[in-house]
Image (cartoon, rainbow, N blue to C red; front, side, top):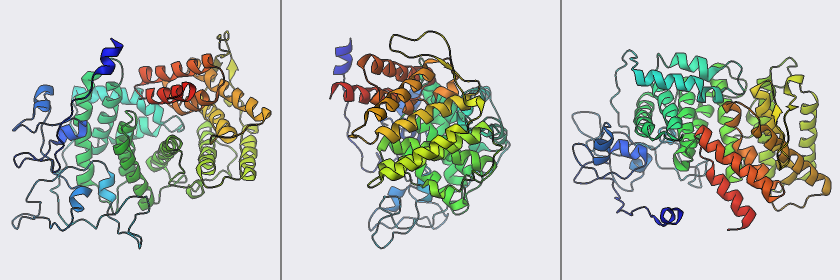
Length: 478
């Protein structure tokens, strides 16, 4: 069975350069679902089979702006494009209107196209929010599931409470929530029924964002919407779209002046953005696009809750990422950061203390109980941070004492994930598990970490098997 599965190959097809067939545009729904469209009219075969709305493309993209020596054809009767053009692939398309500098390159490493032509897209009139049973089911799943994961370091529960309430007045947030929730459900075992539902809401949310958000003055809900659209792509490891949503979020943060000192939805979304950025940087072994020096953090308060203590830890992680993957990291700076982290640890309240329980496994892992989910998640990232500071980047010669530290912290990560922790804690365990599996010694212990990562995808619907494959290649060779 395995050999036959491995032998199957995806059928190749002819790639259309223009996305058109017989003067019709590429189906917007198929584009959002990343599937090949036969462009049959009036309804393509995919949409007909899945009973989806088949929509022609109607929005503006960077690719349309960048065609050399081509003047846009605009109708003289109405102020909209005379010919249909491809839909945007991400929220970044709306903000990518900056002019090139003297080198012709943008500040984020992309070639910048000239500013787009002034073409007005007709706005959809606002109508009262109407909910159906499917939306209510997705809203409920969101509040009980992914929203609690997003709020792991936010005791105000902004995504679970505030944003759920705001969705009843905002079609954009409502569609973003439904898309994100349906996508997560679709990645669970036997969740394929949610795949077309997720694609439909994603298309609607992206269309609303492009139509309603002014890039020069994005509204308060803009960053929240991008973070959920980016999370939609991130949990399925669809890199290109996620990276571009990520850039769009960075533009909103800079345009609105959002930072760690912001309040409400902006503050909650900022820290979620930071966690996404750390994830991207560690995966790509690169520095952060927003330096921790520019987060505008305030750690002078003494009476703080567990969520603020945990966010300070993420500040340390951000500093470590820039140190490790920056140019010529200095050992003195590394030691200074280790000293700062030790002071943070020494000042932790008793609520951050984990308690061992049960018997150890054959590999030496022992379950650890934490009273507060934020404390368990912070513990995962503290041990990951210590591994980063002692052992990354490879190759790195370790002293015996440093090797002991790395092994101890790798064990602690395994102990926490082995325990009866909530899904909100597990949702942030993938990268700590990856670095634990990368550095822990002994093939049996490594195999246990691989098992934890496989469970991560099965239980949560977050793609993690690519990390398992990479760890196995590191252990056995390509």
